[in-house]
Image (tube, rainbow, N blue to C red; front, side):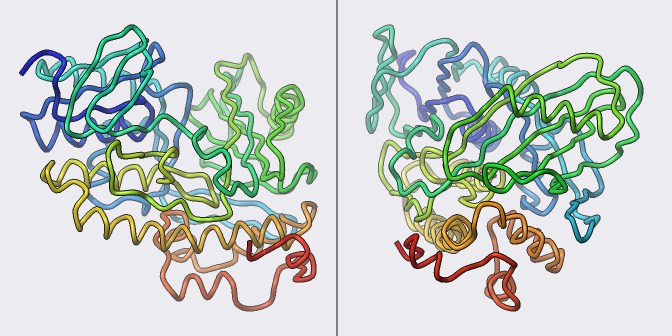
Length: 383
């Protein structure tokens, strides 16, 4: 083949296309894959986490080389109770993604990794780069991030500032605190996330589920440092800082069986309520890699998309309830009630694989304090 013709063209070097590239190169060793990323390295500036039951055995095997830390469980904290969950938890860093995926491409001469060059146009079988080079492939997958969701029925935002802190002394924190809501409630539902990466490095993330996208980085940075001090951590320096403003939809984003295939956050392949993308990204990557290219958008894809959309619709209903039926200062009560559910239901919710009984458990029973149907109707719950 000419050097600019491939079997797969992957546009955007974030988590989704990194997993697709790995899966395809593992399962189709003769495939020619081209991955284009406008940044200097793959993965951006992120730390992705996932629950142990988020992934199938094949998904676990796919991401195993990317995992930088695993824990046997995690805890949550609320004003009226604390709970430790036995669900395993794992972290993947963008540095590890960049290192490992780049090494796979280096060992695959038929494929090509393009860094530091953006795509100026993306079509069904052709991509033009900003410097004028044109690439061709029968399969083009566009996964360039959440910006494409603007105007897609956005109902709220998940916002955060995360600080990876180098410590002067060893931390007593042994397992993640995935949600500490024993903090001042401000700008919607607020909680702090604490992740012990090494004995002397901890990630502290101040997180909000808010009505608006404005992010006060200085304020959230100061709050994260104050929380670390409250945990008794002796901070030597800030090793890395990550910020995010993720749009949360109130209506499902229906995947389309057409080229270019929109994937990742841009295509709605994420959890609408949590903003998590890891389990969904792995499912789509495994589908791409295990399907004959000519059948990529066939019945198996449509079945995957239908199930994803069905799960999304339920999650978007929860978004509408959270943002329209509950006053911002009372939203903590919704999550406090959620974490009293059976652990298996919680795990399936995070994996976006809820059952009918899970969905009933979440919605039925005594409503959380602050839920108002009058407020919901005023705010347009069903819109």
